[in-house]
Image (cartoon, rainbow, N blue to C red; front, top):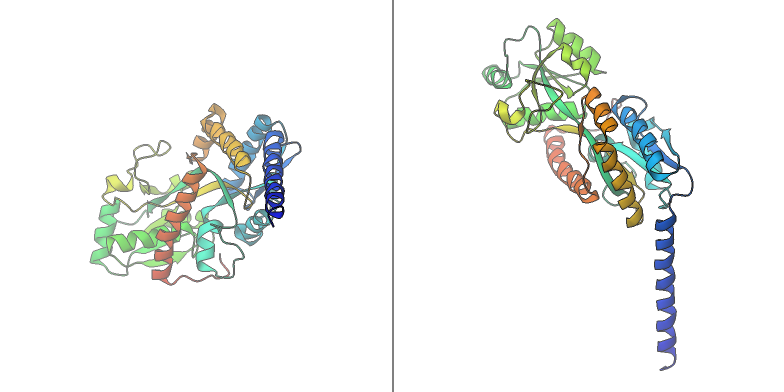
Length: 324
């Protein structure tokens, strides 16, 4: 017995040493071949951000970062692909709050756990939601809109880009916080919603900002502070509704158990992209905010969003449907 224990100890120590040495060698030499950046959306903000990031990362890492677009299932298929990939750093994903946080709350059949089945790498950007006023609606501010809605229960018509979208949830959050009821109208896309706002068919609209929304009156941006790409537009804090914030973020994720050194390397590249002159110029053109920060910041954002939007979704009894 006395001989077996020292021998067992030496074997275990050898195994640990090999594992550590193997991990270190992977981190030191990575990458040695192309990296797949899996994007869950074709076109739109995710694609617009993903491609310039891939170009930047290719130069920084010395290996091609190749964009793979897998738009099926509203981002769920792409997320599943990343969650099931080998944790070697050669498959990473660019995903949004919708498939990572909102969809799993509304659909218990989603086959991943956002907290357990991914390695957070870095927040990249977010697109704040904005509150828009219809051309024929008398209110000219969020405060006036809320006052009118309180005086006319259930009558204010509020457009959004579809059930369960961030625009829909943001509208529900405002109504809950300001204690009014409304008539919510889902649109297939924001273009149709803007057309009805400009034409006076609806009173208010809520959606993630993009430049085409400037065709309607922007009453407020749903952030704590004003944003540079919407000069003169008040934040929700300035509008008198602190805490009613909503944005659609995009972030980098890897498979579970991605080596910390590889996570750190990718995080450094992501933050360098957001600080670069070209990166900032591209982001400002499409009206998004650079975020960045540590992997822990991304994990914290995910946890906070899950708590906030779970309550909104539960209170409104939103279930998965074919429009998601």
